[in-house]
Length: 264
Image 1: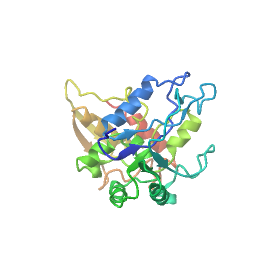
Image 2: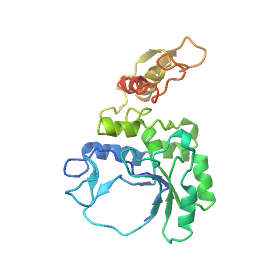
Image 3: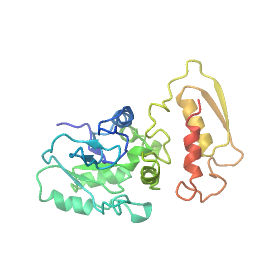
């Protein structure tokens, strides 16, 4: 098998599947957006081989076992909070690369490294040093499905970054479907699609907070001519009135970005 690059999307559960363990339309739209975004290989998440005992509600099922084609080296505990497997910003970066390098020395199939490798330059360095054959990114692909294409085209500075807030994990526990605090389209690729407008308009956006910035971005994406007004000297200085406000400390931050994505 030939892949177009060495960036792998980690197997993150979504709970988008049908009760029979099959991909739903929402599942297909979600993975199609990531494939279109340029990732080399997609792993589809927790999958079960026993249809009577699904891994998770809405999880996918496999019909048969498969041979080992690669090793995806992670670490942690499979419990309710996937302790240590989904890392916060405080845990550091590239947490499992040492383990991946050790596995690579004793196997003859590709090794995939994962664990908060969010920086494309760090990913390139790991590959160049021969410590892994592929780099897996999970949450960064939720935050920006176009991450691979942006990096490949020299626009890494335009990547919408994962902030490791773990909203995606909370969403599965609380709402039984994954979503993203910084990307309102995750899991809603069809519902929040932004086709080009047949008649471009002049759009004025007042305020450059998260909601205003997202409204301006979506309007421009649709082909409208956008003007933004902001009373402060720098855009997006405040979110919900507090500088310390993040999706982790104030849930309304993720909500305001989500609501604004419906702007047309």
